[in-house]
Image (tube, rainbow, N blue to C red; front, side, top):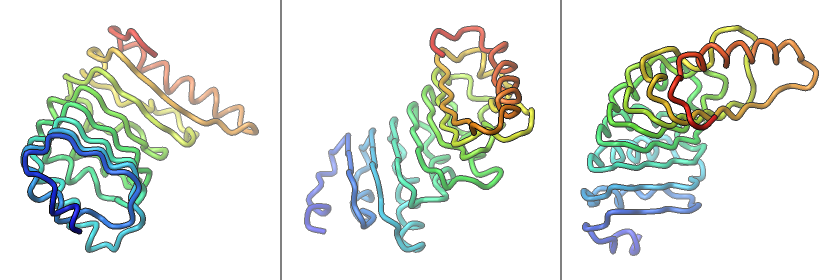
Length: 196
């Protein structure tokens, strides 16, 4: 608690490692923060989680945000208020509900996005993010349907880098066929790619 209170309000960048308590009062005074990275948070109480996300949503100067944690399940709603973001890295696999990533549609300046959709397709919320240049998807496995895993939209034409990290089941060869179809269709629209 003492270290948190000592954080100077002029701080521009903050990296937090593994910890078991949310830094609730620490974020409130950091109005000039442009970069925040949180490596891991142990499971917090729901009330503490809500308070942390509320304070996170108040960091309107943030340009870069990296949250690599399993403890927060409602991150996108708070992130949607951070309209100055150009770099967003959300390795939080609890974002499973359909529509959970819809708040990202307001991030019109976003250039880099990495997230772990846990089997969800890239949300249609990304379709209008025409500033997006790098998209990285972390998938635990492909579903069996043939819908494209990357949502069609104007943003595909501006992508320079597309990364899809997927795991396939060894005993499900048909899933591989479906997965290839789901990847190929979006690639036809990503005409500016330099890295795949």
